[in-house]
Length: 76
Image (cartoon, rainbow, N blue to C red; front, side, top):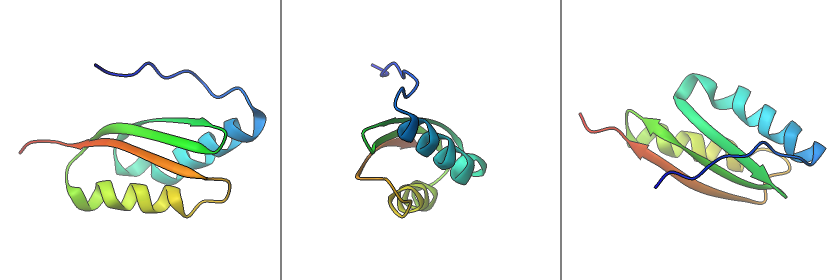
């Protein structure tokens, strides 16, 4: 069952969500939610390398406390 994503309400979370979206938008169609610095990312990507790259990019961003990576790799 897919989780419903609500927009961030805290201004810091809104800004972080925007920055993350810009940083990873070329890597796949992703859904990003930020709450108190906890980032939940889901979507489908082509390979495991891209999944790891997205998680690494998000973890390296200022303000991120924790990342829940729910990204799935498409079946070829």
